[in-house]
Length: 570
Image (cartoon, rainbow, N blue to C red; front, side, top):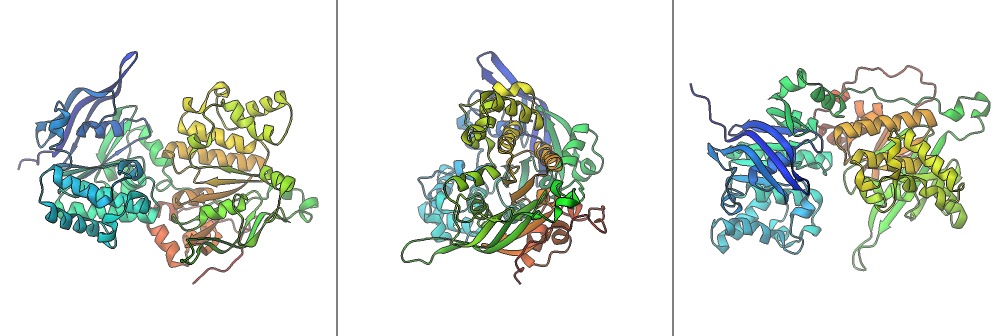
């Protein structure tokens, strides 16, 4: 019996980019196959070459990039040397493409219906009337409500998940034989991610479409792919059937990726230890055990004179025990970031109170508000956007000290050097600028800057969601280490429940502005009481590895876990 010929066969592919110093090779001798109807995951860190490899298949390499050698065979025909014009007959019709960023991938000044119709027109698939019908059918097929309305809307009027569905509709419009999906869910909440991946699977089953799934999320790869191809430094280091790679990885790099993936690796749930101030029994009674207390927070936004106000935060209450990490989780629009902005005093609540260290911080003004800002620091999701590109690393870290008038120039410089060492960066980064650093290094700089004024509370708003799993794991280890050494308290905002399971001691689950469930992380994750919490946990790829942590809870922790205030909603 003859084996089925591969639909896509990449053979000994080399890719390089033109630079002032000549051509720089970035992909080396890559060979992989995708069979008809098969899902193959191409995994690796940023810079591993996975996106360059997949882009080369469609001739969509960035300017200066070109294939230096090898073959790219589609059903046996080598398309590696085809011109851009000739490849247009393949793009969309035989190979669909789902890009990573739905914001930059859709034309902001054209309705989505017009953009989808263009795919049919380019390939001569129908007249104007029939194309309109097929566009509406596609929008309904990918799960968008009221397709006629959505077809008239512009990208900015849709949520991130909706925009990604439009890109999927565009990719499968002409029933291609192969879909290349480049990080199609990396920016989405777990529930939306699951719906998108389910949709791709459903369309694949219906049409027999093969999928080349480019991802750094090994949880997604483990759950969805039949085979995994692992890339590092532009080379394939390992490939094979998914279960074989997961159960018995042959390369140390693959083992490290698997160990760092929060959805696959097994980590014990964290339990509070006595904070630094409680280790002396003589002062325990004089100290408030909670660094932060939020009570009855409400925040509304006006939607115009004729529409009722939108309540983004609705009666939110929780506490953060000193020296611990409290996480707030939920989908986009759940109110978690607005809550964090209220805590940081970047937004004022319409009702409720915020207490820091037992003192009311809700209505601070002037110098008192300035002092509060020193005691509460933020680390944002995007370290590149939050760091001044004109400043050196030393200047960035010492900036809060200058702003608060702490020390002289020499003292601030010494503090910057000490913090650079504290966050495990090499000393020579002090004179570099953000553009010269990797994403993980930039996030370490952002953490060092937040530590400079010696805050009592650090708010981390999706601070690791944009990082590869290995970089993410190192940042989480750093945060844990700093917490243990300095007694720091964290408010951790995230939509990634696998990360929250690893880093937090207690958790609040938010939905539509309200807390529906909260308590010790192990308690909530092992025995969720609310249907929404169960839905979030069920959406985590391979969550069984997280939920089945073998380490038992200590029978009598020295300090009881923080049990946030407020009642869970039925």
